[in-house]
Length: 171
Ligand code: OFO
Image (cartoon, rainbow, N blue to C red; front, side):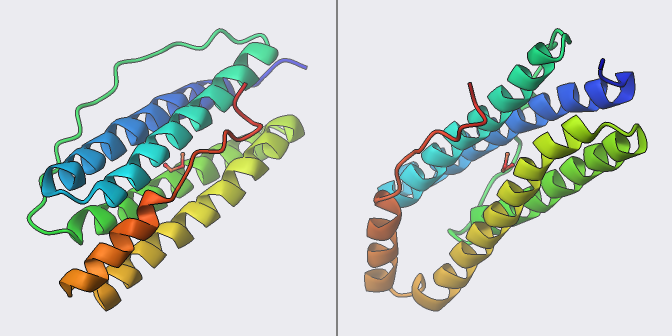
């Protein structure tokens, strides 16, 4: 089976979106690191690794299906923040955008009767659901506890403990 051209192109574009996600989260890590919140910075540095893994999973899939991926230019993130809540809200908005993008590829694959790509995208659909929950939880935690210095300190310590576990999708 060869991949439908439109589906292959969308998967290739998604590689770029995942790499942009990594680039975006790098700027969030920079913001928190600069503020002295090393735990938040750590959380987003792990997220950078996750996003690169998502891009690698799509690259692998294209190669395994005889499509040569094309690495396009990654846009410059242009966000600036004036408080510690804003990056968390920007993260949730971004994850919703990525979920929508994955859904659009899923619809295209389904329309092309491409069940193989649908199976691959099942993993990404689940991952997006998890990432949106994480992003929402971080906003809730910040609103509940982050307004008090001790609460913020504890949250930062909690996020410091996050470690990267490479997903099986990225080979
Ligand atoms: Fe790749 O999951 Fe976030 O964006």
